[in-house]
Length: 180
Image (cartoon, rainbow, N blue to C red):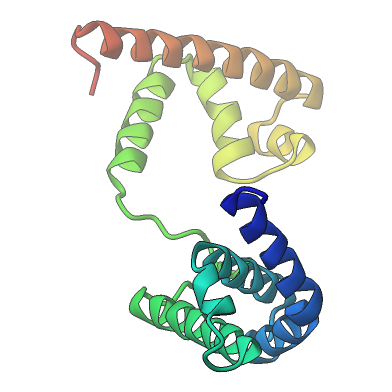
């Protein structure tokens, strides 16, 4: 006689081949989601495997018991989902929610301090391009300098700004006073 585990697995295979399609159709109808229905059928078969005596005791219909298990599992999932707060999908048109503005305040203070370390020419070019939103040509007109000069100043200004920010960050990490 084969071991009990092998008998139970054979029983579950037989149950699935006989009732699997009906279980899947019922679970899909209840959930409206094929993937969720497949998970529920799988859980139903696991429960049948754990309780093979229910399938072979001759009391009631095997299919009825299995369909009851499916319905109970769907009900449990529904209740669990209802107990959790509603998930809200992100709207791509809305800006991301900022929970704490402290990081942005610290970042702006740090950037402003680093900008103060730049020369007036470099600061003026960055102001025109990044804060005023002007193109190289528009910034050149506003500053009264050639566009090539605006381009090279912006390159060197950004490089100096990166160095100033790197120095500020390393001072903050070492515990030395960070300029305010």
